[in-house]
Length: 133
Length: 133
DNA sequence: GGCGTTGGTTTACACATGTAATTTATATCA
DNA sequence: TGATATAAATTACATGTGTAAACCAACGCC
Image (cartoon, rainbow over all chains, first blue to last red; front, side):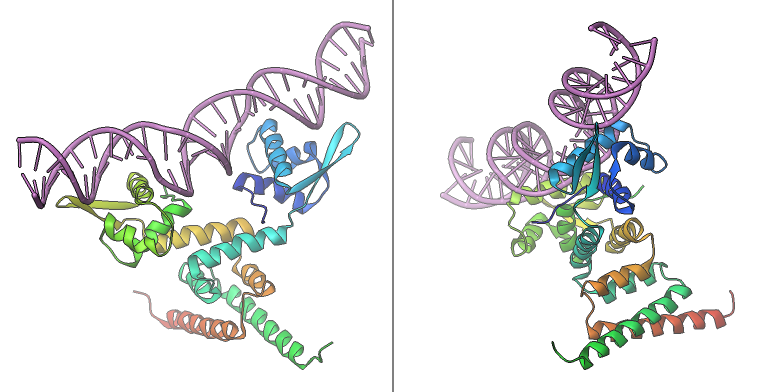
């Protein structure tokens, strides 16, 4: 059973992922620069996130402090995994090819990618040599 | 102004992208194996796609033939681009890193990726040598 | 102690989406 | 020509989402 949150809700999560716990006041302030939302809107989103179990609230005097339950990693994995599966049959290579075709890969990216891949291959051979525990 | 279609609608698009034009009958048949939808459901989706301008219909006797207006490429670009921007700040490298961390990259994928990158670098140097027209 | 402020809770409301059933128009067959 | 089968168009309806406003409770100030 995966927690599923909406686009707007994810914006709120983002500020909590950045640093938490935060009061609703903090959250509203943090969002001020990003979204043109009324306070009431943020409060609604916080409540929806609460009932979905994506965040938790602990009382702190007369207000609440909110912190994420759904981790950013889990969210990223959900989102990107589902897109990868739906649109590219689960294959990463076609996805990267797509980005290259669409000018999303700079020369610098290519270099960074090569480095990443070399790293991954290295890690892999490491783990192969490692004795089982 | 980008045409935005829903998940269910994209399933219908998929069969049209595979090959078109198709009658609603064809589409319903093609979907039979994939989705457990009533005919009426498919027809609703076709109508919604029509009003969104994602497909066009041409009369063929007493029925219609449907074909995509929104291209699969444009759709892929929208979807993957928006995910890339929202979740990875537009950076492909972190996205690939994410997939590797999440076990979506096999050893074979790494090899294929290296090949793809080499190809891209080659293309790039080609285009640099090329004289301007 | 009444009152405004501030934070939280409840209600609102339009539009999108998933998933159809119902109705209408039309072609065909008996 | 009237009944039947089809295809398309219209209507339906619950749930999710974006976006709030309204209401309520407690705390501090005059």
